[in-house]
Each structure stands twice: as C-alpha cells, then as structure tokens.
Image 1 (spheres, rainbow, N blue to C red):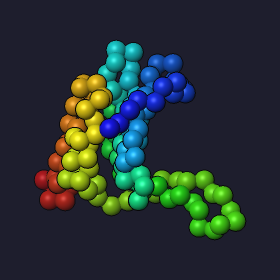
Image 2 (cartoon, rainbow, N blue to C red):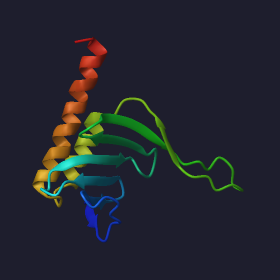
Image 3 (cartoon, rainbow, N blue to C red):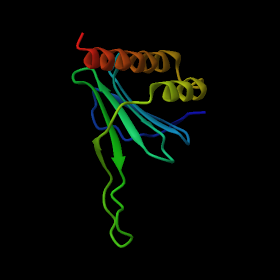
Amino acid sequence: MLREIGNVHQQDPQLRRRWFRDDYFDIFTWQNTDGRVVGFQLCYDLPAYERVLSWRESKGYSHHRVDGGEASPIKNRTPIMVADGVLPLPVVLEKFDARTAGIEPRIRDFIRERLLDYAVTLDKTATGR
C-alpha cells in the first residue's frame, strides 16, 4: 500500500510536490495552487528493473528506465534516465489499482486516466491513426 512521504522539498512556490511510495512504486505529483495535477512521475518495478512514466501538462508523456550507473564496484555513479520501450500497462494497472487505495481519489483517478490515455496514444502512433 502506497503511503505519502511527508515534508517533501518544494522547488517551485507555484506547485505543490507530493511523494507516494511503497516497495513497487514511487509516485511524484505536482499540483497547482488549485490542487489540480499538472505533472507526475510514476516510477515502477523498483526492486527489479525501475522505469518511469512521466507526464507534464505542457509536454505530454515520456517513458524511461533508470540506469543505476553502478557498472563498477569501485565507482559510485549517478543514476540517469534513458529511453526505454513500452510501458507494460496490464501489470502496472493491476499493481496500481491494488496499491493506491490510500491515495486521494482525485489524484489516483487522474493518474489512472493518464495511464489509459498513454496506451491509446501509443496505439494511435503504432497504427498511424
């Protein structure tokens, strides 16, 4: 079950940044002063092969995997996001639905709608429609 992390560093006074976490997901949201979500990052499959679906109102979607940067045991490199393949939507949706009961419904529902919209966007791109 995702729980909200308190006392999250706020970088932009016009946006409220929130963080929800469990052993499979990290979810970051950015909300405007009216409480509307204007961006999020859904980090998933944390213990195995971390990937990130990002959505920004002004930019749309991007999907990446996290390269841990730890190719050598004697160097500590910074993790970076690199382009990745397709979001495994059925798995992510199943886990999202099972783990987000404690998140405010308007945030949970908004992110779920964007996940479904992302799938439609990919389908249109793949079929050329």
